Amino acid sequence: MRLALNGVSVAVEGTPIVHDAALEVGDGEFVALVGPNGCGKSTLLRSIYRALRPSAGLIAVDGDDVHRLPAREAARRTAVVAQETPADLDFTVAEIVRMGRTPYRADASVDEELCGRALDRVGLGEASGRIFATLSGGEKQRVLLARALAQDTRLLLLDEPTAHLDIRHQLDLLHLVRELGLATLAVLHDLNQAAAFCDRLYVMNAGRIVAGGPPGEVLTPDLIAQVYGVRAVRRTQLVFERSQADEVADLLGQAR
Ligand SMILES: Nc1ncnc2c1ncn2[C@@H]1O[C@H](COP(=O)(O)OP(=O)(O)OP(=O)(O)O)[C@@H](O)[C@H]1O
Image 1 (cartoon, rainbow, N blue to C red):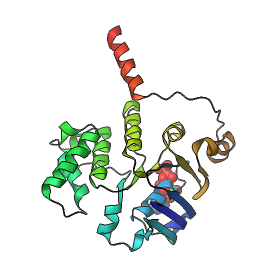
Image 2 (image 1 turned 120 degrees about the vertical axis):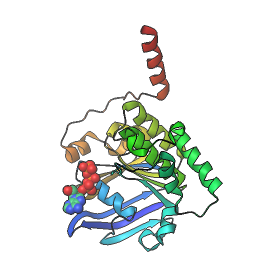
Image 3 (image 1 turned 60 degrees about the horizontal axis):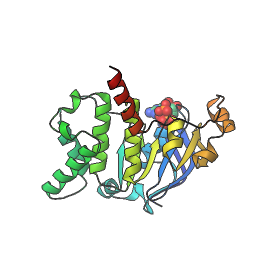
Image 4 (image 1 turned 180 degrees about the horizontal axis):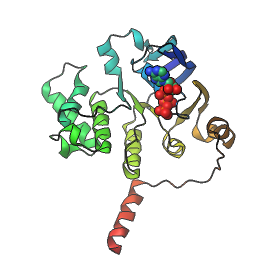
């Protein structure tokens, strides 16, 4: 297992937030963590990327307790795009992405090449000289993903990666993450998107993981009612693929 959590509890400033969580992400698997606001998703994620230390349980990356690894080694194994966007950094886009290379002592040209490729992958190859603070929220989000990609890890943690993105960029990002083929654990709010893009998902409620498995098995109307307090109807869903978005744009262009 690339990532395995067992019996993980996390307290924040003495308040227990996450209780006895277990989850796994296999090599190349795209796994979502969903659940209502305040249920503890970010807190659990923060304990995986070492921003918080669990009060109980084991968090293993490639079989090793992540909280016992040297910081540099942990950073070579796990990249994260967290929810808090550094707002007014006076760095260029290229400098931000290059921060992803900090855990390595590589040739500057290797770093340059990896950073350039990471920016190209998120569609911001032309923006490398821009000042990060001047970018839109969505562009910032994509730069932070590029920084995570430049870190060249096999485990990727994403906390609401589609926040700030319009629908087109949300879908592009989810497609991209799928194509990367990295073991990925992503906090997502949109259940339809989680169901469409993820191999498996875990549902959290009130600090506990209450269900886990393939989306079709887990996201039942009963579970959604119990966890979110809303009635859901399962229908064949409409997923806008990028190609469809292009067709729609073409049609709109012709109509003008
Ligand atoms: N520093 C803190 N001090 C006290 N309580 C905190 C602190 N940080 C988080 N919490 C509380 O822990 C709970 C879980 O927060 P968390 O951010 O993990 O939830 P979440 O599921 O990610 O929510 P959302 O979907 O709204 O982002 C919330 O009730 C929150 O208010």
